[in-house]
Every structure is written in C-alpha cells, then in structure tokens.
Image 1 (spheres, rainbow, N blue to C red):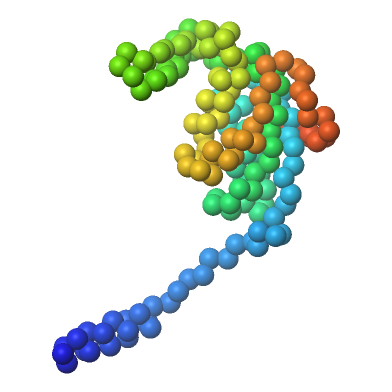
Image 2: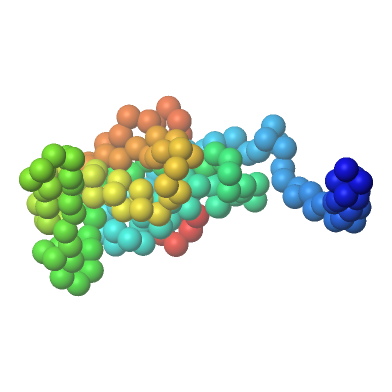
Length: 166
C-alpha cells in the first residue's frame, strides 16, 4: 500500500512539471465565407489543374487555413472534355474499377474514359490530392465539373481562376 501512494505522487509530480502547449487557431466563427471559383480546363494539363483545384477545395489559399476544418471554397470546372495530358499518357494511362466480385475488375485507358465521361477523369485526379477521410468526402461535394462551357451556377457569381494563381 505505501508503494502505491509513492508511485501516484511521483506520477503527479512528473505531470505537474510538464508544460502543455496550446495550439492557437482561428475561431470558426471568424472563418472567411466560402467563395465560388470558375476554372476553365481547356488545353490545361490534368495534373497541374488538379493541384490548383485541390488547393482551393482544401482552403490552402486562405490565411485562415486549418487542416482539420472544412475551410475550402466551391470550384466549378468547365470544358473538362478538352483537358490534355503530356507525353504518351493519353494511350498509356490506365484507370481501373473493381466491383468487388470475382472477375469484376475493369480497366479503361485515358482516351476511352475521356470519351465516355470527361468529368470522371478530372474527379479522379482531384480525389487523389485531397485527404482520404470524411473531410475529404465533404470537400469533394464542393467540386462541380461540366464537360462543356456551360454551367448552371451563374447566380453564385464565380470568380474566374487565372492560370498560375490561386
């Protein structure tokens, strides 16, 4: 019994000597409101475009960025069907899908997938660059991709993203 008291007081003394660092972060009420951005994918390289989109979705372009909060903005991508890749990737890059059943694995080349659904090419590129958790799933709901030049979000008055900015 006396040993137990001695152990507990020693542990209490050790914990009182430790300094606790408090990490300061902005109050969620003072976060910047979400903005809407318009990205034109015409003749853009897929990976470079996906990087810019992912930064906006995560909120890394804001000064109030906190990695564990949803502080990103909305992104509208137009002309997804006119995106390009470098080198021989148009014929060599493969996308796969597995249904979970035996023999349920499907492979698509970049050319086939861009012809079938150009939105999926951009979505898969961006998904690979954001967190793989529930927060990342919520960020992806802020991404709206259209294969043509028309979109239906004019009421949000999106700000065009200039190449190399944001």
